[in-house]
Amino acid sequence: MSTLNRNQLSSSIETNLPDNTSGLVTPAILRGELINIIDSTLLPQDSGSITSSYATFGDGIFSGSFSGSFEGDGSSLTGITAVITPGGGNTDIQFNDNGVTSGSVNFTFNKNTNVVLLTGSLEVTGGITGSLFGTSSWAENVTSASYADTSTSASYALTSTSASYAVTSSHVTSYSIPVASWEWNTNYFNLTNGADNILPWDTEVFNTNSNIFELSGSGTTNARIHIKESGYYEIIGQIHFFDLFNNMDMLVKIMSGSASGPMGLVTLLNDSKFSENSADQLLTGTTIINVTTPQYYSIAVNPSANTPFPSNTDNTPPRMFIKKIG
Image (cartoon, rainbow, N blue to C red; front, side, top):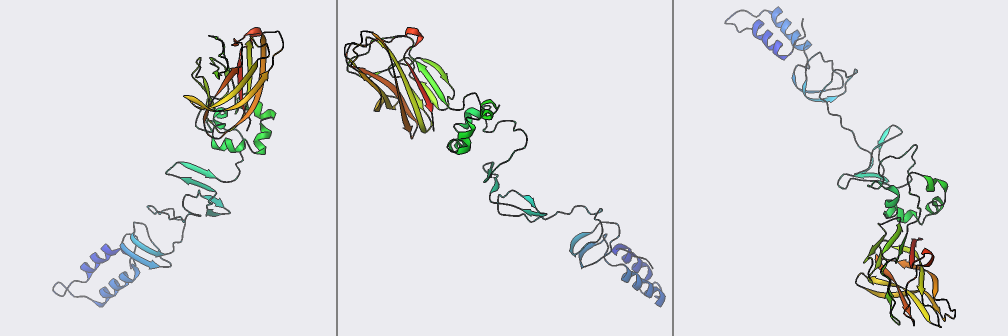
């Protein structure tokens, strides 16, 4: 007997089991066709549905549904879509957890924002190439990133700024702390007695981070330093003038406010009663300010007498330094 597919069985029956008008159906013929039907279960060539725990398929294509199990290496199976149940919750990144697909809320990816979130520690063996914060300068942008704001107050960051690795590493510039300095070098004029004279800084000596410090109104009596990031800052003023004598007072202030005008003040230094005969004096004052929101700052000098004139003796003009310290 033969193992036949559905089409072959149909053709065989049409040939061997005719109606009585064309010939007799012998018991032998009937027996043979029945054995063919029994031997020819559903084959891969057939289309339909199989429910079985075990079936033997020959070569061919089976379409339809199957409920049960396959035995073999599956090398001839094609067009089968594997269904994998993900581990964890939505947006969790998948990983091999001792042979089981798993996920964690501490390691996620949001396709709408293109953000990978890692809660915990990141350990890197080898080097990091490219841009960590989206620009070419890793060191400058780390100071203005929210991650850096947090890390600068952590013991690890405070320690690393003084370590040789942080100073010499290619991942940072030679400045581990944002600092800037400006001078008044040209267009000198006498100060007005009894008034707040805002010094017209006109020369930037250095600025390690323009994302934090920016001078506006350069060379004018509206010159102000824009501090763009919150934190604690140390300000040092070197006030160099002639005509500081005859028991006069010299009050120097840090004035804060908008770009159009000062709104408050902090005393930087207050030297008074100059009894020396020298007309050339270099005064130095230091203060610390707490910047809670981006703000403009200027230095104002208020002399009591003599209308002092700026001095550049020994190449030391009026100068200010500003440094972020926390």
